[in-house]
Amino acid sequence: MKKAIYIIGLTIISFGCGSKEEKQASIYNNDFEVMGNWSNKDQLTTDASHSGIYSTFTDSTFVFSQTMIASCKQLKNKSPKSITATVWVMSKLQNPKGKLVLSIDKNDKSVIWQGSDIQTTVKVPNKWELVQLKVDLKEPLTDDMVIKLYGLNEGKSKVYWDDFSLTFE
Image (cartoon, rainbow, N blue to C red; front, side):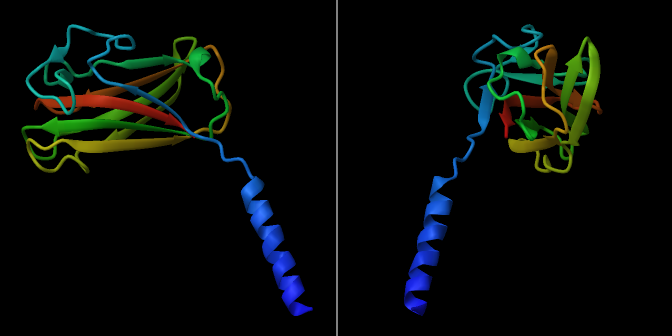
């Protein structure tokens, strides 16, 4: 009898676990080899890149990197619980000051602005490091919203940015 209950219990658990559908994350990648979603095409360099030939840079003159712009109208999943932004960053100096910034704008006003300090990750000169930023969303995205992802230089040293990515979960 105990054996039958045990087998029935395992069967219920296996069917219960197997029948759940897992939502896959939507991932949007953009590097500087494809220029469709970038704001300032003049701010490219071949001095350094994580992948491909091109990257963008910031320094004392160019405080903002090129901006990846994604219209929420184009998104498949309008109700993600979070957005994870990543970028590969490299500097010739140790601990450059700056941020990976994700903003969500509606009617040209920022409804969400969040930044992740790069100096906590980029500690070794001339080495590409992955910087990550996770933004939890309390409300669904609407078609009139725009997501912007960019690098912000808060120092004077040159910083290279490449392979921006957004993941909606």
